[in-house]
Amino acid sequence: MNEILEELNRTINIAKRNPFYDEIQQVSSISEFEELPTLEKEELLKLKPEDFVRGYEGHLYEYHETSGTEETPLATWFTKADFMGYVEQILESPINFNENDRILIRFPSALSVPAHTFTEVVHRRNGCVLHAGRSDRNCGYKRAITLLLKFKATILAGNVMEIFLLGYVAKKMGYDTKKDFSLRAICTAGEVLSEARRRRLEVLWGVPIYNFYGTTELGNLAVSDNDINLKVSDKNFYLEVLDEKNKRPVGFSKKGILHVTTLRKECFPLIRYNTKDIVSLWKKDGQMYIKHFGRQSDVVKIHNKVITMYDLQDIFLSLPTDVVGDFWKIMKHKNFIEIIAESPMYWKQNSIGINVDFPYKLTLVPEGRIVNIEGLMKEESYGKPTYYLK
Image (tube, rainbow, N blue to C red; front, top):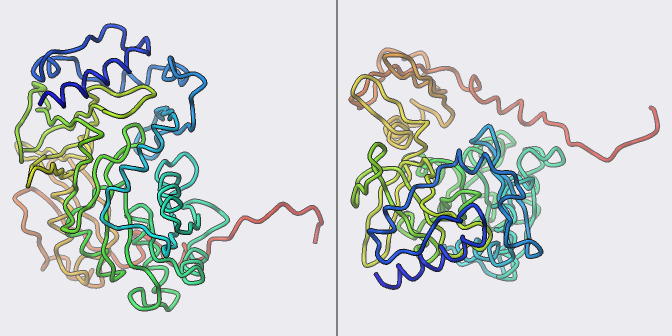
């Protein structure tokens, strides 16, 4: 416990280099630390990008912004030590990146932290990298699949939905996703990955799925171990799971809101930062593990019943794939939740139900109604500018 306290006070000392943390003082116990105010994202969004770097001018290495989940992006600056710290967090994975690996990175290169940190991870282990970023007009879905084959990629990395889309495009192109590629593992990040959804992804590609849980502003908090549990990088973070209302600890194995204190970040450490993620923590053989249930904003509350994104996914995606497909949307209504899912058996609307004690409606639609795979295959590449009229 004294070691943890020393780490927390070290973080407080680093934080005080920035005027934002002027009033914070060192603590003499964990209970005293837990009385410090929590840090809300709304407070950070009021700051200008330059406000984050006070005390570290001249030591900056990279700049990134959050994207995808928030309307207003949050600035994140890294010193070189910060960036390499993110890399070390990824290297805690049991994947064992090596010199024979060729990784095709499908994370977007613009703004995205994972695309850059995964590159450094593979280069550090003398492997080879191919950037085929999502949303890059130079690399549509068909070209990404062609590159996956030509490059003989051993690892594919990207957001969960993107890996599903690539699998379906590959099958539409006539490839066997389990036999025609050289993959040994897939790395996912950026989305809630329930156990049922992970199983579907493994069935689609025929290789193990390793999930990485983190945020742009914090780093990679946890990685899948060989048992597919998310193992916390506890030397880099101090985690608290607090009750939503009273901000008190909920205890192990209970759901609450994740608050994180960074222990290794130099440029603007985050102290008791409210991630707005619903999680639970538990320990096994001295190692901390985490389960990510999704964001607070994705929770559905109807009357006195509550369900998280993870739990909802896990229930309806446990149905056979010929009943509920891999592409779906969720609509919140006043008195129930509607799950709209592609299905080869979409005409059997009234004979299919899910085992959930929650008011719901399951609406099945034809394949292609939610995700048009044919449309993805028609994407045109963006070439160099031309100056001759044809």
